[in-house]
Image (cartoon, rainbow, N blue to C red; front, side):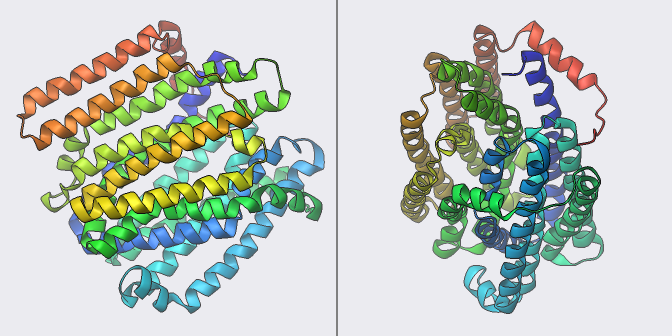
Length: 488
């Protein structure tokens, strides 16, 4: 394991683009929700769901396969061969998928969004998401080689560029909702070109069919898992469109977009702890499960802090940022914060390490089934709020099952008392905030309870030794360091 100082420093660096990513929705949401109708926002959300499904198909699970095999081929020419071969293969599949989407764009738009008038929006969203997915392989290289600053800068550049261009296209050029994915496409193309140029100068371009075959042997069984996983994360919106309205999807998407800040924040932490977990697993040191368990507890605390804070104050954020037609997203955002908080346990590579990729797909199918059943039942009763509650319920079922199975193949000795306190405060605080607002309790008493929940969480952090003077000093030092982009 890397030193505590390095862990804190890398965490701060990886959080930089997440701060940017969090600020962007907060800055653009008031613009988009006042310019675009709920129906238009819902159409973009449904187009994005299809785009995520297509890119999941085209990737063949290679994002996970590349990350795993990187640690087996990290030296010499094989390092560059693995990267470029993977990129070439995925690019070719993306082109095929994009062509097929273009040919059938009107039929697909009518089936997915509900109107063939959104055919161009559907195609543009697919292209934008495909280019974003290609960039991920370069970012995995940065992450696995410890180049946190390069990872942060390129991620932030794309986010900022996409936001600026999206606002220009939507508001100034009056392109409508298609301006959002169009801005993302242009920004992602620029960043991808810059990354390709940088790597081509530093790593000789070469290919290896053997390495691709090895990688696909690990990753292709994950394709069902990827597709089912995407379906599982997007089925709530699709079912809401079928059982409710596209406008309801628009409101739900606003709440989900705010809550996804938690997931993005958690992904930044994943960039720190996943390579260290893999490194410890491959070394096969005695007592590795206990070491990993102790190593992960602070990350669980820090990631859950985001879920707690945003879940408690989703009301204030949405009221300030959006007009009244979107205020129905308040309880949706809070409930989904709980869901994304639990996703910390879904980012553990136990089954990937054991090469149980087929089992991962089976678990994903179970998760999809649970998500579909819960959403159908809950949406019929509570509409958009039911979609959020159904997603949370299904997530609790699937995460519990994945934890039980993962422990069979690589046992992690979790610090259960610490985790119990962390998640008890999270659920009690957020559920309490949602209930008090629904019960009509005045705002000031509710605000006081929210503050008490944050205070209790801070006390838990102090008791666990996570909120300590030493860690705070290291984080402060890391924040003061100038972020410069190193060479790969």
